[in-house]
Length: 167
Ligand code: SF4
Image (tube, rainbow, N blue to C red; front, side, top):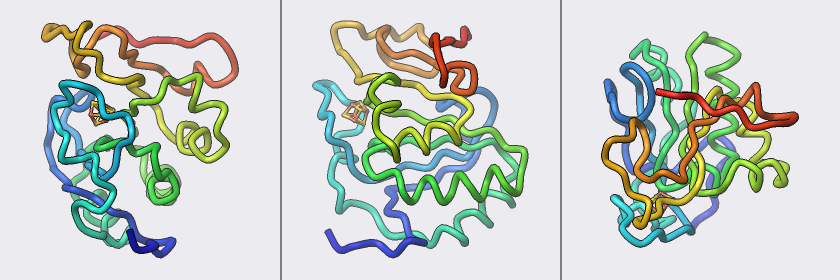
């Protein structure tokens, strides 16, 4: 894969008005690249780090602002290459009151041990963590596919006990 500039991000898609990637209507941003390769993954075409196309982060932020909806980072795994999402999350948090949800196949405790993934986590309001486990699949769960995945209140969980949100 060619190196991205610091103001670019590689994405599969951006969808406005989604209702399954977090509470309310949201702008969902689908990144390219995932190393978890969960059996039964709903979106295996997202595993390829070279898939999709390169977006300019400032232009993307302008579109997000225009949409006036809260934002979800998903994929793929946004935590695989966190730099572009850190830049985008900084713009969102500095200039709007939008909430950010982030889906990741890493467990929250693992993210906290990686400096740049932790930096991205700290800019988020909610993280839905852990791989999809087909053995724990549950279609009745809101906003996640398997029972091991947790909906975590990030700001309440950064420095201690993990606080899960119930929907
Ligand atoms: S973490 Fe998500 S995108 Fe990645 S393989 Fe697992 S289910 Fe698919």
